[in-house]
Length: 303
Image 1: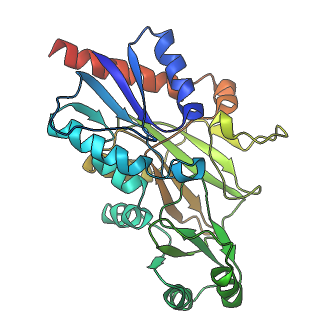
Image 2: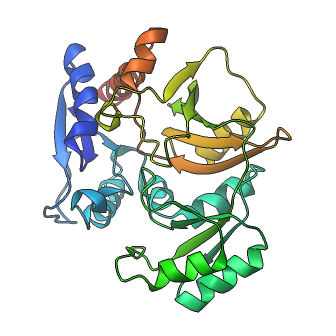
Image 3: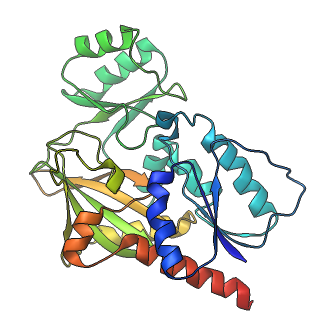
């Protein structure tokens, strides 16, 4: 039996493979940017960890999430042990669904209106009644396509510009811009449904906040710092939300406004960790993840 890792980005997955190898845990690389599936053929034995990303299209892997969705359904139909299954993938690629799910567990999100079609997007911005606001695609990932819009005229010009990349599912999100007390967000990491640590992320350099080492800024500037002894009542709500949706490995990001209110705005079921920030605190997210996968593999071996 092996740990099968489903993904489409070697750069993000290699640190996990390194930790699995260090523990002598057997694993197999399932790179799902393309492939075949026979839904009636029994899958191999083992556990299956889904790391598919909503931003796969930015790496020319346009249909990787769709293929992964079919693979996950196939695995689940044969009762294989799947970590971050179809429910997790659905939320990974659908931000409107994320916000509805978070809100249903008492987790406050920024007011967001989804819209398809130029006139509806402009009307959504008017309905929001707040300037500036955030415009983002419903399926994004790694900050792709997120923009701060100052005026309705700016929005109209952007929508009319032929070089503007359209959302993959046709849905734009018009979202309240939360003015933070400082230029930073907090990212809370969970493994096995349990809180691991929180990271402070500097947002003064833009909206692309991917923590993976492969995403580090070329000039060496550091954006990430692990917070010591972070605790907040929102963590219990996050844990309950993840458990209710069968999500075992995730990161949830929030921003705190000047009045101290927390707004949660992103649920990442394909999470990464920043090596430089971890080294300073002597922790390892990928190491903890490898340990968890090893424990889950042992459970089915002993069953």
